Length: 468
Image (cartoon, rainbow, N blue to C red):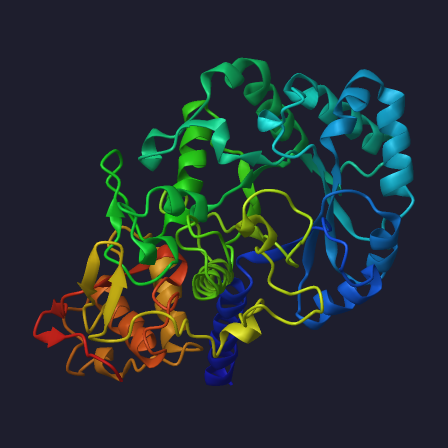
């Protein structure tokens, strides 16, 4: 009976750990409609459900879309457009009427979870920045009157251009002219209402402009040696994490460490003009597929390792009426006929067999700007000595349990039991899991408790094995 109880407890712990890893982050999709050839809203919601999508963000409050979402169990973020900010800021009655018509009329059968007040307001050519916080407050007061304020959050998506410094990440800071008039009042509002900062983040644009100094593998979440931030000593393995941490550093610089973040837009175009370096189907598939793996496996950024992220991919469809360069019309995961532009998983179930097959294989040569680069043939996964013991132990238990790692060699009396340290044992378990998964991107993460090395590690007399 005692053994049975212990087994059940271990199973429960293992299951709960697996669940926390599997569900740690969340993926949503932006449903933009700047096109004249898209399927009906009813068909779109059916498409989202067929892909297992649990969150969607829209750029207005179109009745057809909100009605189609009713009863779907898909959480939705709606938008009060920039052109309505002035009225919402100056007239509380307007904000109340807007909430009544566009939120209360559909909630809760349509699961509106947040309202984006404006979008990238700081770069709006119509100079609506000064109305932003007042509009947010008036919309919130309208939610209070309907008693929705505890269930629906209010925020406003900001572009990375709101930062004065973004490199290195540790030097992240907001533009000085925005701090006192709008950034601090907005962050105070988010803190008071228990909301989060919405951020639009596009590593593609940084890579496109700096492809001579930014590694494509680094931009696409592929295997790479990482970049060390000289300001805080942290090593970054993706441009996405570095950009997000620049925002976290900017928040910390203003003493708003408690503010959480949701990435309301990120993506990579499948096609671009000749001058748009990096825009291709292969790169878009790698970026979005590896990003989904990165988010759903869980764990935060190097600066905030415990903070899981909700991320909205941009976008659901290629939108043929969007102005600008070719890339603007080619960020979609789907063509308007609902055919996939490329195949990537959007759920934890889909990730089980996902491999970024566009990553260079062992010993392969790849061509980048500047010529051929040798790719290291073998890598290993090791535990981070900086991870907290509880976190490391939980990840070790998962790897040896549900993860299916071969942990026989680190059992008492076995060949690699010594050194009997948590870091050494976790490294053996993590590496076994990593090798069994074919060294797939994201399989050496464990919520930030592990990282990849390019030289075979040795603990005592035992070396970590190569491919299993």
